[in-house]
Image (cartoon, rainbow over all chains, first blue to last red; front, top):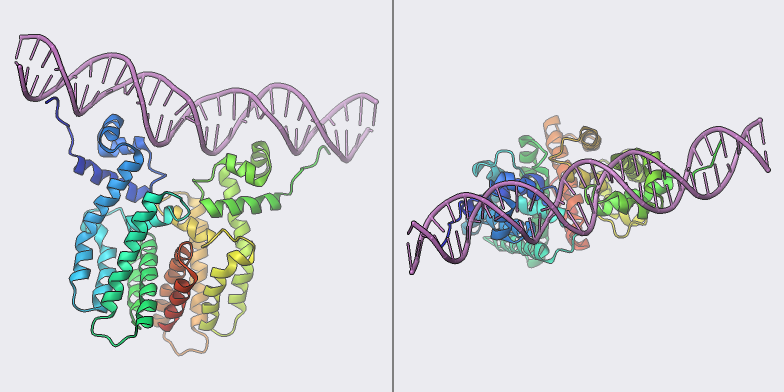
Length: 189
Length: 189
DNA sequence: AATGTATCTAAGCATTCGCTTAGTTTATGG
DNA sequence: CCATAAACTAAGCGAATGCTTAGATACATT
């Protein structure tokens, strides 16, 4: 054996995630990552291969942080109420994990930033996330309900876009506006 | 007098706007603008001062293109129905003006890209746009209605965020999803 | 036609980008 | 206690960024 790593890869990725979340992918430079992660460029490339590699690990890290919110949604038994709670949980999630300056959703931000991008790895991560969300909504909408399939499909489409819009809006809108939005979104579901 | 300009500033700004709309601000380089606008960097800087200047003119250009959609909303007498028509018009606007590859709304894209940015000029343009939109919604919601002020305020908040989400979603979602979204959005009003 | 001036071309500026590499430090196995 | 190998530091790579400038070109006025 030789010299051991002076840093913990999980710890530095959390810092990278926080930075990407604040600035997006393109606006975050490797020099900024150096400072935030507290390690040299050499170490970044030794551990993660490229800036792109750091970003993919950051997305994974975000998903792990987000897992509890998602699990609560999936384990719920209340149907639509669980989805509504999920909307509120999603907005509050950043402050709950100590990211007071970060708003919105890193995945949604990434979805928007890479909307016109041909990056296949990122696109895959994004469509997976969206499809999964839609499937869970469909399942929740069917709980204790006599809705037909077509109605459920429409409402799932609606809620996925509403969640997308909420994540975008929560970066710039205040608490009252957010609450009005969520309450009215679920008024007729 | 001396040599005359070989290009029309309005025409080249339209091309710049189209490019910014496709790629966003940061991802559009001055070299790309050169090619798209069909003029040299010297001319770009002579006419617009900076890349930032080209962008601000592009935003103005977009607003002019968008004016008819907005006027139709303001001149309408049907209240909420006018807002709903405005949502559909906004989605169809890009194809109507020949921007078949462009989706979403340049102003909303900019709002998202500059959400964490300290650029005051851009921020001003954006908040003006959003405040104006909200005011028009409030006015429309009061037409032929017995709603109290608080309800109108809530619904206006809801619709502004819904419009924001729609613009974000229309970049990546298909026609059916968009339609489901708009229809269900207005079931709640 | 000559002149002056604004517009054009194209080369080049400093800076930053993602990434690499030469050379030093550090901890461990023999 | 020294040789070895991995992790470190920091300088530097080519390419791209926004922007500038020297010099050629074209056109209205004299």
